[in-house]
Amino acid sequence: NLKLVYGDNLPMPQKALLNNIYKNFIYLWMEFLQTSKLSADNINEHFNIQNFELIDEALSGNKGMIILSGHFGNFEWLGQLVGLKGYKLSGIAKRQSNPYVNALIEKNRTRFGVGVIYTKNSVKVSLEKLAKNEIIAIVTDQDARDRGIFVDFMGIPSSTAVGPAVLYLRSGAPILFVISIRKAYGKFDVFFEKVCDGPAMQTTDELIRGITQRHTLILEKWVKKYPEQWFWMHRRWKTRPYEETDIL
Image (cartoon, rainbow, N blue to C red):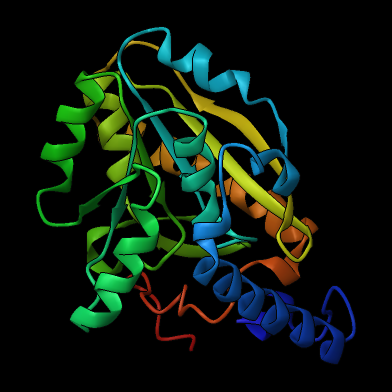
């Protein structure tokens, strides 16, 4: 994937970049296994949060809110952050094929009142929760196969899930993007920014594509700035447009 995006012009020496990518990945899962150590009392010791007031602003419309992120920094702890701040949040997730692994992940994810919505019937359940002015969280940067639409990500057409755009257009729930920038083990700068807000609109292919491209470019901005903190091990560009041959 690095070769596909950067060719021979990596953003830092190859050895250092690979070491930092794997270190971030190892830190992520070590932190995830220590999720129980988080609390409302110590959350600000782990996170330096910018623009958190955007959550209250978004929820003031009583249409719920959609939070998007990517597999970046420690995306797992972002849900815990919002839950520990006292907000009702549910994340959409794919059920793991191994039931023991799934149980472990679900236990950690739901430790502080955060809910899990599995992908089957996720749109219906999410719309119900948004109608109750709750928050839906989605990580949006995996290959969406033939269920997605192609938008530009890192200069490459990338099959991307349409769920966030569909939820927004059907509910009018504002969309925020949140990213965690690792500063050290267990220490992050967190940034919230608006993707779109406004009344529910007719669901059209053009609007879905525009919203999907918008939040994808926000993630791209952070990946370009901190490439070592994104999960490059995903087969992000596995699905290709019909007119293209495989590139991986």
